[in-house]
Image (cartoon, rainbow, N blue to C red; front, side):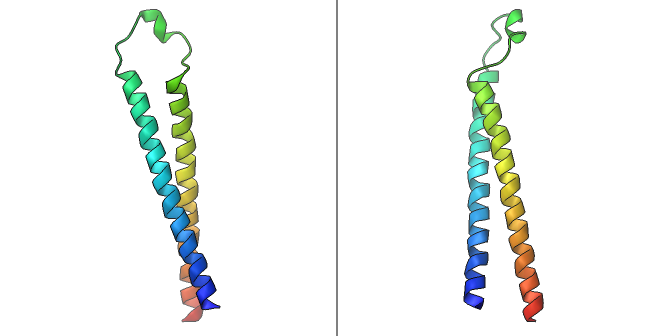
Length: 92
């Protein structure tokens, strides 16, 4: 039984760290797109009044989505850590 619990906890830790790594990569990519678009010179004063669409909008959505993924992965990691702590306390 302890092998099953151990492998389940390892899977949770692995999934959480992979989720954090993927979210971090997505945040980095979205940030690069946003920074690249903001580095372009302003076209005209009226350009700032028009609604933003295209790559910046997609990057902002991606940034928000990856932020939520990172938060969820961090929560999974915390729960897995708490579970291992409780198991150690119970077995000790």
